[in-house]
Image (cartoon, rainbow, N blue to C red; front, top):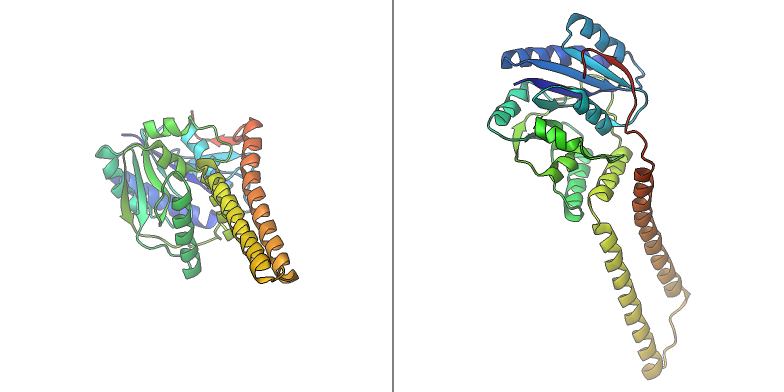
Length: 308
């Protein structure tokens, strides 16, 4: 079985050499034909040049340079479209995914699984970031139409037929983890260790994580729209109850309407809900707007290596 490794990278010059050395050692021990395919775009360091130098020494290491920063998931899709393996490893280039864990995932592919994803025993991140991740995953599983597990990442092996199905999706803001869950092919989790970044900085700030979550939710669920209806019904019900209480107080107890504080509080509360509702609807409209443009998903600037 031919094996491809697709790695999206940006500003990872400090990690590339070590990553390639460890990957090569691991893949040689597997005794498979392989290629290592990096996908990059706009770097502030010499990541692209370094990979080209490694390619000159080992033709199995290849690189695609995109013309702009289209995002990690689009970079992976580009790699999936141009790779040639019967199965493909997807992993990050920051060494937080151990190349030495690939055989564990690969053994499950040989057993007939289409998607084998790494379930990290413990992520080496801050306590706050880990808590944020758990809350985010739990919330997403509650209000989205597909499920993901906590402590998973992009690190996984997928079969060729899974790749073919992924490439059928034409979304402009794809979420590969959700797409693979949506496809529903035979999958299994394998526990692995979590490495630590040796150089560079993470590319995912809390804002980018939140933005990714909102995009994924809008792409794979209509539950927020239903939630709007429920909120509207509840607010209308509360207002009706408040109106009845006010009438009862006036008719039977001759108590007038409460003061300005109550009125202003109600107006502010309802106004906040309206803005929240408009925001959710706006996200769906923005999604429709982006999809109808039919722009190309990415543009390739350079290819280095024998690529289809």
